[in-house]
Image (tube, rainbow, N blue to C red; front, side, top):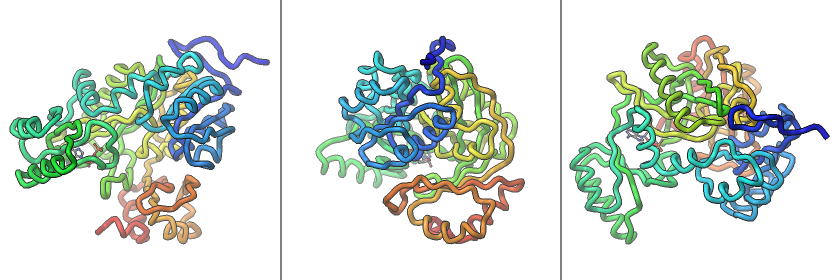
Length: 390
Ligand code: AMP
């Protein structure tokens, strides 16, 4: 039998086709990783509580269990050569416990840092990179003190576990502060939190960086629009002056080096009205705002992730065409499907989720275009996304 593991590229063992990649989490990010892994010739296993989850539909095997089920993580590691994950709230201790069974090229530092907003902000600042002003807050007194320091408006976020705006409150004045304190008193506890100054941004952006333990490559900076705290569309590339583009690439490389990055890391940014580039948060994995790379770049974020964790070389991705990516949430499934026949330019992605729910990410559409503004208008004019305009 041929060896599945060649010698190392830096610290990462180079795996060959036939080796098995175990993915913790079976959603759309894992599915797109798995599709990439499959055509590179790897076997894929996943751990997810939902039978026939998106990854299972393209994987070789699924272990049906909760994400924090240590026995199941152990089994996945035993059956895999390398472990990765598609979301950040994975039990880092459980992964550390199986590192003698399967390689974990991403390590667990990246997970631990990105699981806790205080550690994350500290890491970003320690690597010479600006964030909103912030303060760790553990109780009512701490919140009052943080407000005195940071001022209104501010955003209060739970340190751990929040996503897409969940676990967040915007505090615009004392009324909001009193409301948050009353709620904490009612619940009998004050969750460990962070208070951030509200960033007066011109727009939100993001940049992806991928590594294989040795080389780092960056993707173009893109412009993101959210509705109800959920990504609605991504415009690639963002229209920014070269200085902003350069700063974004430089900070991406700095942060990635700090993690000795393997795989793909997403960095969410605010571009302020006075032209500063401020980091909002990090995602230690491929990202919704990077889906456009599948059609629009010479290397996509999932291929870069897979190649990175199996120690293959990475070539700097090139943007082959400007693009617009729009998310298809549960409420957009029927209207977009009804229009597929009229839109040959739509690159339609459907994640195969069995249950269609309001605001659930069900798929996305990417359009390659020479005129991103006209394409955004054309997408909005279909009326498919009208519910987001309220
Ligand atoms: P997050 O979960 O931290 O990505 O926050 C969700 C969304 O809330 C972001 O995409 C922004 O639109 C908004 N937001 C979060 N933090 C701030 C901030 N410090 N200032 C302004 N807007 C923010």
